[in-house]
Image 1 (spheres, rainbow, N blue to C red):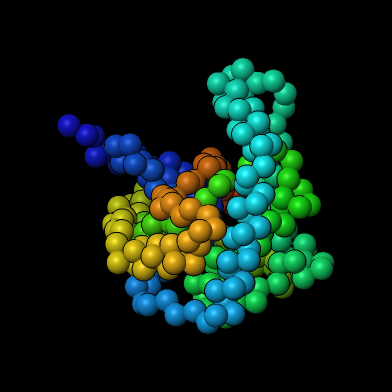
Image 2 (cartoon, rainbow, N blue to C red; image 1 turned 90 degrees about the vertical axis):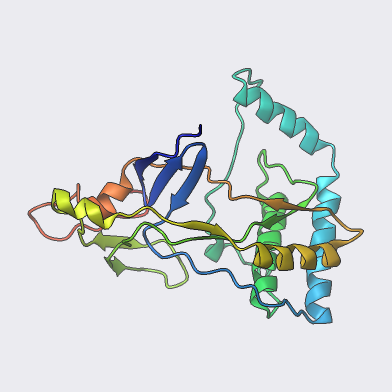
Length: 250
């Protein structure tokens, strides 16, 4: 019998619910939007844009260096590392579009999201690859929806750059007493099969003969241990007025 008893982990701007062997991350800064199951209609121009980007990805993914890097990452994970590996996963994208390499040209929201993913991957490969691996396929994320866990953060923000989605925040405490914990509820997770199939079939049509398409689950790679306490519980409260948390936690 699979143990379905939930385990609640508190993390930096994320909460992690572990049910049996399933892991679900929730960001208290917003509620998860419901996936759209509407038909995807793209113009020929948008299709050409996406096909061109996919062709570039396929060409790069065919390089032998990726198999070499995959072996090095495997050795690292097996505690048999040959050398330190470099993974760049925090990039200020709003500052990187110097030569319009990241400028989106599609109009349809679905196409723009896919275009954005491809352009960023290609940009990183060209300018700061480090030990990244470009996979020989394009991922089609499963269209998952969560009702989230009942509350979201309430904040006052201080910004210096309107284009930056990282900014300083003063958190309004929502969990002050033990009974406030009841505000946290078990989320309901659903898979919109129809929405996934619509997206998957469109990708198959677009990239036929260019690059394979694979359905993929969410792949959370970071679970923090502090900031959730800041955003909801109030571990950083002080007697000298509001405290603003910067991007680096200072």
